[in-house]
Length: 539
Image (cartoon, rainbow, N blue to C red; front, top):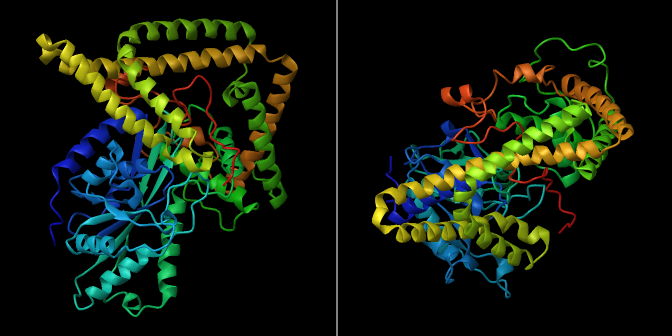
């Protein structure tokens, strides 16, 4: 087995730095399917959906354990190279291979032979290369048709090694799902699918000269694998409806892992996208308990379309009033609302007070990233710029954060051994306190808005939700094969990242966790209101 290329020190540094930065920027990064990653020495092409520019590559680099693959060779558009910017240095220092794109050259003449030779050499040595077969990063709800370059590279590698019966090459597809890709302390799911493995003796149809239909077949197979692990829809409205159906089916507080949440939402999305019930609904997650006769009532295709429209209308109403579905599901009397508002305000004030010292260190970082992103948004429309916002926040946050750390250490040079550890610890603890303070303040604001809604409107919304819950459960249980009692079922199913505190001390404290926030909702961000990412502009 080839040992792969030597790993440069800059790659080690980048992986360590951005593992730290990504851990700060995103609340939870859940990685599934690590066992599917081929080990170092086995040629591998890693392919993923591309919705978040450079952040996608950094997520992949930090998600693949170094003991499995010592290095992931990246690719990037050639226009990112040769600039006097930190981003350009970062890309080049990581050993990234430049790819020329026709749209970046006015004359349309490109030469990717050097890049192809570099990738081929890396694969021959048993390395792993990363390619985004959509061809470009884009902020869009659907995965673009994949280009055939990956399959053609596989064909070329098999043809070069046609006399080596032991040679094999794998395509490792990966789905990256951002709950809110550009928002601070949101969550990310990374799913590695079973690899597609090819050998000269097993796949003679891919040896040159090759029928291009076989190339398209592999490309379509890659597209299907990637699409099954993330949200893929022709419009934001469909994703909006599916994300509304999930909390109605499995209400806030259900001990559901991020992977389970995405898969359930994806199940609703598939049927809304088709506009009808799909044949042979999945029963991989069987029902616990028996559903009543109303839930088991037959469903028509018209019911699916009407449910999608009503879910969208219900969410629009909640968004207009700035209240959460959970407050409609569990009605509160006005005295209870006032009492809870007082508790939330007191708790938020206390957490904010104890975090003020560390927040002073975060202020330059926040100001720098805000200024950079604010100016960047002016450079183009939503669909052409929003996919790079997270990249700007990560890079500017890293640079400004290092400057803050260096300044704090230099100003306290006599006690350097103490401050070198105390400063990052204080910044992390203040971030965790502030995160819970914002959550308490968000609950306070939501309760205040609920208090302002008149009784008649609340009664109408509760009746609407009760009707939607009945119809969603009919679709989930009868049409999609989902469990009839999700709150009980998901307690013992899925991964360990349930959106609640973990560990012995954390479970006893039952609220605060130093490691990460105890979330009851995977859509939560560091905002005072529920976030919706549905751009009104279309490319």
